[in-house]
Structure formats: structure tokens, C-alpha cells
Image (cartoon, rainbow, N blue to C red; front, side, top):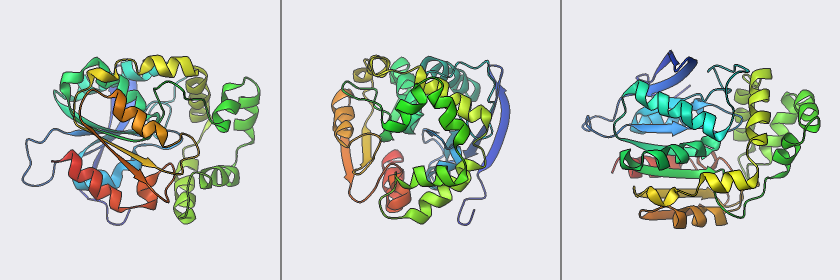
Length: 279
């Protein structure tokens, strides 16, 4: 990809028995002791979402199990607890004593990880993330996936055109960027990813999401919450709800004219997030 730092390398190793792929980049020049940033993606993409951020901040961006080029085994526990157990092993595998977190969409499982080890979190950036909060109800796509047989049928009928059309709904203006994102996601949208999506959403009714966020007040690291104002999956009110639930100082930025992937529609957000994470 043009403009991507050639110092970004890919690692592919077993983590607690799970073959996992991640991208890794060194910290910026002059900050050798900076806490590394762990970037966690959502559905239906992978760690490539964060290549522009890795270029600026360094850090680690894995493909979560079931997505991208990590394992998509049927035996993995595709639930919040399953992902957090994997992330605990991943952090231990990399020897991360202190680190910052940047999460998007289902990367919100990282917020549960943060609740389990709050003293190790340096800084936190929450971008249009699945609400682990009271009052959230799943969007229409999720309701389809959560319904047995209907979800399988929807997945079976999904083709490149349908995925592109669905992701365009999550963008406000830059539809070409939505198309590029859809092409990248489609290349890895195989049966294993479809199975992971169905199991993950079915494991998480609203009460489970709310329970997963009960300990957010333990996380006292400085936080930046960025939310595309026109996200069709979760309204901007959840940005403020996250800021109120977290235990440390939190700044909220509502991005006008942007949807679920706000940094793709407003590229200047990459620098804003990077500046916050490397302060």
C-alpha cells in the first residue's frame, strides 16, 4: 500500500494454541520507551484497518481469531470471554507490561481486557465501538445474524456486491473508500469468518454487552472517544456514555459527516489519534 511504513512487519505465530497473524512496527524515532499501542479491529475487517496508525505510532495490530489471516477454527470460543482469554494470552506472548489500546467496533473486547488489567493501560482510544453499555439494541444486520437459520441464509447469500452495498451504508460521503474497504474485507470473508460473526453476535444479547462493561470505571487511563456522528450501527450518544463510564479523564470528539469508519472519511483523525496516543 502506498505510503505505508516499510518498517511494518508481519508476524505469524501460535498464541495459546491459536495460529495468529499480527502487524508490528517500532515506535517513532525519539520515543524508544513509549508504551506500545495495541490496535483491535472489528467486523468484518482485520488489522489492516490500522496500517496508517502503525505508520505514525508504531505498535501491534492483530487479526482477531476468525478474521483476516488468523485461525478460523470451529473450536475457538467466538464470544466476548473467548476473545478476552485470547487477548490475555496474546499480551503475555508479546511480553507487554504496559500498553495503550485503540479499539474499533468489536475491538471493544479490548475494553474487557482493560478492565482485567487496568493498571497496565497507558492510554485508551475508543472509536465507534460496540457499546458495552446499558440501553444498546443491536442494529438490523446484527438482528439477522442473531436469528438462527435466517443468519445462515443471509451469510450464504452474501456476495461481493451485497457486501459493498452494506458497507456503503456505514459511510456518509466517501463511497469510494467504502468500496475499497469492502474489496479488502471480501478477500477474507470466507466460511470461517462468516461462522465467527454468527457465533459472536449470538453470544452477545444486550444484557451480556452491558455486563461486559460493568467494570469500565476501573480503567483510569486518559481516554479519547471518537465517534462518527452518522454511524448507522450505534448512535453518537454512546460516545458520551463511554466517556462517563470510564474511570479516568475522557475527551469526546463527535465527527460530523462521518460514519462507522470515521478515519477513512476524515483522514486527519489518524494524526489526532496518534498525537493523543504518543503524548
